Image (cartoon, rainbow, N blue to C red; front, side, top):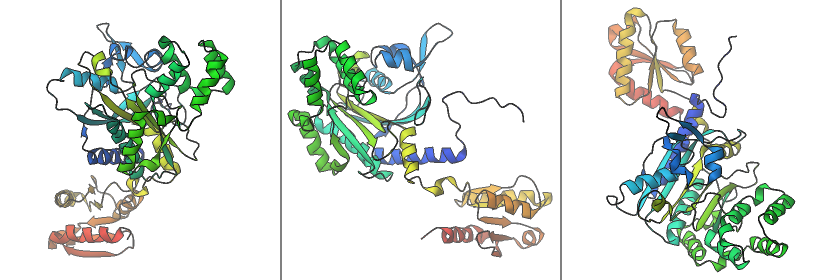
Length: 429
């Protein structure tokens, strides 16, 4: 066997069955987004590194982004996230757009991370944002969209949970401990890392940042308080709205949910699988009210979230929630080629059937009919059509049902309707 050049580390090959799952996921995303009145949009896959440098934090830019100079020397990045691009697009046409904006997108992203289960360097991501309204009810709408998607793909509140917090609340609690204001973001990052570190390491990091033992114990205390949210008027309204929207069962308060990105300003949330070995967040987002001004526009409130395809795909697969039929059959019918003389007759019939709305494969060369039937069976096509010398003379076709071996010869104009009847009989009740 020849040496085959492998794919780039951290990327994926999308064979048809894998592509079918990706498209199924996209269609579910599209349906949920549209049901809330959101419009689809897209941004470039390449951006200047400057766009991310002051908006997303040093770790994303310096350690996780694919960065390179173009031929003119400008530093570019394969986009690691979409929110800065969204802010740029809105800022460019801020005086022309009608607010509030409800936008969503689905596309590829790249991060220079260590590939592992549920994490690759190239991935697809759903981004959805509401821009122009600063209310807790707006935050609740985005959380409700996330919950509606979980429900749409078959995940119940026993399978997944959305954890919600308010950064302003945590900032206030930290300030009450006399934490220096210039270190607030460092401590938010510390809280964000808590679940990924051993308790002793986490405590050592807190002390290294300048916390004394009294402050550390007080921080642990408020981070263990499940009722801390009652101090936040924002979260009270968020949870009340989620009750009204009928998705409260999916949502729980968690004071340790922070989100690591620099631009979040208030409500933040993440979804996780329950009773699963998939520990990565399924989706995450929150309110970011300062980003528009940072890219040159006027200040605008905004809230949104992103969901990658990897973790959610693994969870759905593990629970058997990906419909098996989406990957099976590439076409409804295969039109055979009896011999070279009748090849164009087969092509013409295939065209007629396609015009009638059927998905049709037509053989592009003549081979023995049993071989063509076997090919149809192997790829999952259950209806095969033959135009031989006798059929051509009488303007007829022979239709064979591979599911039960039956066949019938009918007038050619009736072929499409008869094939549709067969296909309908194959569908499960």
